[in-house]
Image: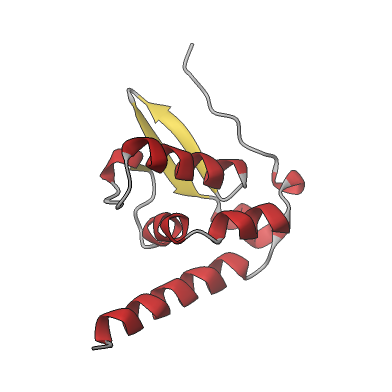
Length: 112
């Protein structure tokens, strides 16, 4: 029997949980990478400036907040954004966060 991870029903996802999850810059980085076409990306594929256990924590927080889905494929866990679910629950929120994060990144690379 394949292992499965628990995901909240989108109707149970709260704005407080989503905003709390997105308050951390590492988690925003994960969300931004997933939004840039890295759908179904393994946790290990992300280059994050934190330990593996801390990385695992960040992915769990995103999943429990309802922002991502995670599924096992062999020994890897693949991640995907719940774009449609989030847009249905909080229209425009995820896009606004991703746009702001991308914009902030662009400013950081052009500022001396």
